[in-house]
Image (cartoon, rainbow, N blue to C red):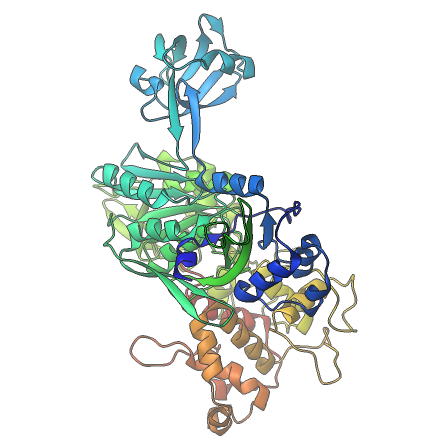
Length: 630
């Protein structure tokens, strides 16, 4: 088992199940392996199928499938993602003005010749490259050791010729460089077996000159979780960085034993294709408060796979393999990324993310005058509005929660301001995501925080209607939207027919066992949700999100809850949820945190919960559990 764990692979995001090729692995053998390793229950119907295709389709798990020898090799190559190229050694982009050098590679002929990122090749061997196209690229490539002459226009407009030697370079899945202004930049495309070493080597090379780091995980579908732990540990330092739970409920963990390699903060760039091992990395940075993340929410894959191959089971495989979902994984604070993913500290579209991250990398001014100082996840960042595009500044300010600590440099001193004041000062009100009708609510900050992170949405007029009640169907829709959960399959309740706007959400919440029907088996989606119903749903949600909360839920004593005078007005079925929301977290000094919007005995359990109260309670839960960090 330990040998298998060392080879643990977090599955790549795949668009669908691979077609099982003709194999020596029989259905019976596959079932035997699933019984041994598969983390989910195996449907009884699986024992009636006649082919591997039928078996894996029945499981409905896109990460468990058979790999032919060719498919397995392609999978290994995709994880390692090491490419050999021959040419001048630069990533390029075709433009109407010429061939733009996007990234000059270390050790390349282009680097030795003195070319830099942003240079523009306007001619190759005297032939114009304006406008540039594929035909011009072919003129740059050739046999290693040969030379090519290019005409380059620099950013300042100067133009000169360069004679560049073509070389063969090995491009790894992780590249590190130092940007202007002391920004270390690590571009990681997958977590292969050597990625941890690439992180360590890059940090050791540049940390003396870097004062802040950016790790780009956009489009990174995962890889080996061990490498993700090694890479994250370079910023977090020693400790348990990954928990794995198998089918029997047993836990295993991955430890980073070394001290951190840099004391500087890291900004992690994420997008919806940052998955699996990328989510391990981003989740650990969040939980350890080693930095922040900028971009869109990650994929939401909270399960890990092992690959059973000839090395593991030589009696069953000969170059082919079986990939099996064997574990659920959790970050260092016990949080899952399943379905919810990692919510970035600064939620922005990919088109804005990198520019916003660079804007947060400004140096602290000697004399504050017009700059912004922002505190995010315990780190202080500076923004120089004169050094970034107006849209970048506006979109960045619009992505900040209303209670983010912020200061504006005025005549040499830092004057505290609110996010709302900063939006107005820089004319960025149009980028604000807040609701138009919550300023008078005592829960305004919580409501607008959830709006900032896309967890709440208003009506067509941008209103939230904080004093309105909320129906059972609307609560399901809210949570399904908040966590990006969809459902495909048969409906659960007869009064939730297909086609209703809330049907998918209700069925998704029921499948996760967050909501139940009533005694008659109906869901009653149009009924107003009560306080005790909502607290029950959030208590179950907490147990899903964090394994420590789940353990707390399992240990709750119904008799003790029934005897608690503060819960006397609550139905017996609601008391565990209230117990979760008032007892599962502490403030570090032994005092229980109450995540409800008021003391439980001050709340009427049967009264309808208002939309503002529901938002305030949900925000309390997500922030105190470390799911939402800013």
